[in-house]
Amino acid sequence: DGGITQSPKYLFRKEGQNVTLSCEQNLNHDAMYWYRQDPGQGLRLIYYSQIVNDFQKGDIAEGYSVSREKKESFPLTVTSAQKNPTAFYLCASSIWGDGYTFGSGTRLTVV
Amino acid sequence: KQEVTQIPAALSVPEGENLVLNCSFTDSAIYNLQWFRQDPGKGLTSLLLIQSSQREQTSGRLNASLDKSSGRSTLYIAASQPGDSATYLCAVRPLDYGGATNKLIFGTGTLLAVQP
Image (tube, rainbow over all chains, first blue to last red; front, side):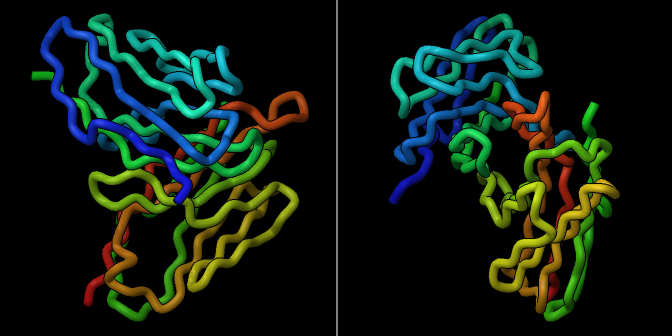
């Protein structure tokens, strides 16, 4: 079955530590996205990528970094510069201009 | 700046009732609109996608309508069931210079509880 796989489901980060969230899709979609979800707020775009080796900042990119070396993969690194990283992170993909397909999410907590 | 609003924020209905969830957006220049369902602690499941040229889409007990000129969409759920309990999110994909932009703008959702 085609879909998006996010791992891990839960992640704990210590202060000052970088962590990487994985996102893999087998839908052959060109575009991939990372969103952050906080309680009481809508989803906010962190980064997106339309093609391999290219990506663009979204609305809240500070403290995050991404790479797109393969069409299927779009990992997100939460760096120590992100001051409030505790949130639910959602990865999505789409054929450009079409509807989005989302993964099951990673819940990141700072300990 | 495009803003998406969903009212009510929460809704509780008895099983079997038909219901309507509302979504409004401030800028009619949209490429499409998508309705999602989110269960607690889970990702988003796409329910219906309406392109800007369409007026409605149907899937099973779900029907979504789109009125671009008034900036409104509704999600109609027929014969509600306890398994329909979830948060329902609406998202618009804005147009920019005549083409689809690169992101969805989400509302904050409606939390639906269907009581058995």
